Image (cartoon, rainbow, N blue to C red; front, side):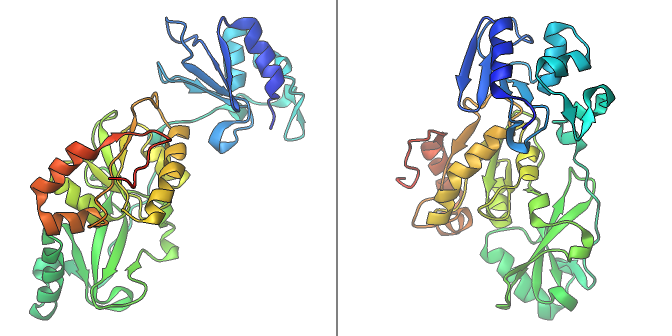
Length: 334
């Protein structure tokens, strides 16, 4: 850690009217907002990504950057002077006089995430274009889940033989990933692109739509559940399991999130971990940003709930059960 906590706290105490220590953070009244509430959160340790020059985030105005940059703005000083104020003498073995402006630049912008577009596997077709021998099996599987066959493809040869393919698109610009689900009892049940494509499950999210920043997205584990909720008019996405990577959290950072994981022990254990990660990558005030709604235990996941009880029941259930995240709540008791 480059920024000493006590040194930064002493600096903050001498410059701001309100300073509050909260764990590893120092919260102060924001220079970017007119009121004097604790909108400016500062992390000398560098936050989730352990950024060398620390990090600040104003949840009132969404201003963010390094603590070196904050000192420069408040003290109206040069970068070298700010580094000296924070007790930094060297960076990566170099004297501070040699540090360039780019070394402490902090980028918290979803638009900076870039994807490489990929192609569908060979021997893949839209389900409606399949030979009769495969069309019946593939379409019956999709229809048994209550979904539209036009959302899927089917692989009838090669590595993905006998699998329904679920495509991932990035803001309707191109294919960035796919997940292939076996319908003939193969193992593993799901297969993604080969490693040569350079993209893994942790690099992407399955979006059913791309709402405007600040709108709500229901975060599910699997694509089938996300597609199910989208049928009922909800913005939904899937992270591919019980884990949420840093990149996935950043992709979700500009939205309100309803954690909508499966009703099982692993899903409930994942709730707190996902909540903390989403908060650490938040681009908005976390208050009232994250809610929770799990499917009923009798169904375990959203698609089974939908197939067994119908869309109206699912919608009414969500209206009744969704609630703002509270650390002490027992979300299994639904």
